[in-house]
Image (cartoon, rainbow, N blue to C red; front, side, top):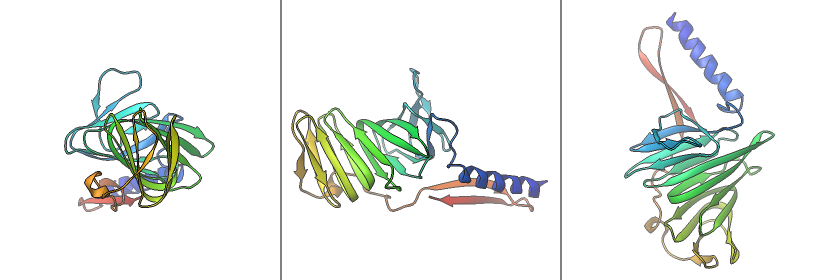
Length: 223
């Protein structure tokens, strides 16, 4: 019986991965892979917040917020693009499905995020009250503190803009948009502005199971 359960678990996991990575319906845009500390979800149209757990499905329009010394790591269900929401942050995740991809739009209410777009055919947009960043096939950090919207490009290209102007940022460049001002190139050390820890680590999905002898094992899927 245990052997059958293990076979069914691996078969189900393979089937899920082969059908678009955990896609549930048109509203299901991301999957919570890891939580550290205080991570909460606000379902669309709800007033209350609930504790987020690993494996939670994120639907379009839902908010994720983190507390002190906390982290939320997500993966999008269409192309395995990755998102990490850092401590003391609030992000609304929106996605619109078109054919086999999701048009991703993040509203950064406050705080910091890191994202890696794995497919250059898909795009991501980060919106704040100060300005907007449009991203395609890129790894980047973004921070918003109610006045300043700062973007650091790790790889690829990011365009930042508001009603006062636009700017194209390349790899290892930073840009800032102050509320009510045009974008400007920012000099300095990104480590002094952003939390860059752990960004080279791949996201993993861990599934616990028992082998036929009753020993506890872990099935680890790297993304």
